Length: 459
Image (cartoon, one colour):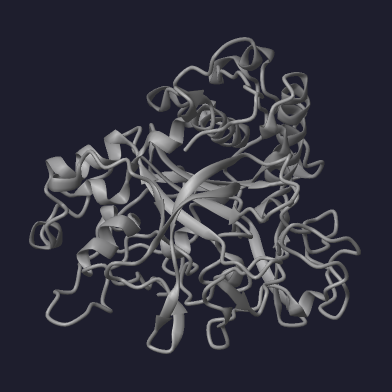
């Protein structure tokens, strides 16, 4: 991939030099229902009532040179760590990953998820091969009737840990140490791409050329076939979303952060406490967005099309119905401090990127989620239904382009609802039930264990 517009941004994160006064240790999120929508309601401690930490800003040094490699092993610990620190390092990783290196973005040279196998360990041949959304057979169909594509990438530490421990072998993985954690610095990514149409204005997005797998009819439905799919080469695509999951010191559960293009979709209306007030029969926005038609009512957004999806024209790869997307939880919910830090830091980074005229000023952190380690640490046989007390940050975090259809499903609208350490019991054929283990947070490993079948973690 290539062709970054000539907007190189320059960053560096000096976590120790940034003062962030908020605490990551509150998790007082509760939920209620309003017209069939699950709402994020927040109870704040007295120290969080104002909700904005004015010190959560990117230091000017970020923009005075090339982006240094993040140092996850030096992440603050104990009483020194703040809510702000997690969002700062999320932004640092985003900017570092999207820095141009040798004509392409840094993450475009990462390994594919196939690199967990010895015979593919050097595979960096990125092909856009995912159209079905998480925990769903539904596809996000853009306003032009084309499916939105994804691809998954991993770094060398993630890959090497799996290879060194032979976890690509189901027989080894099933008996592997249940308490073993991915090493600090391990990282996986999921990028979401919109296919650019002729004469479409994508001047505010990062665009590149990619190879995409084509859909055809599989068992009466439009799908990418498992075996020998046709590939269209050099298709112009625009980056609209990026998941980043990274292990930093003290957080083997991974920090799960997600970013989107500013113009993707509108937010559901919410009050100053973060409670969703959007009327389901009211339009979410009066204007059109990249993935939303103006004046579409909330009830008609984020509708899973799995049962009704069909081709309009298979040759042209157009499908119906078009998906109208809205972001159900701005900032992914969480405490006033969490939401305030996200908004403040987003604005601060964008202002500084404008000086460089960087395309990345048009992207934002939706939110991030991690563990408050004073209340619990990663351990086998855990998911949020067992104990959610330690989960903190953006508690109802979804990327509107990657998890469009699960935003209003309580067990699925947070990263740990799917990426947890629970056993895998819905295995196929003669495959053994996979015991609960810390490495089960990796869907790459779980999918490989199940022989390539989709992971169902709606426990």
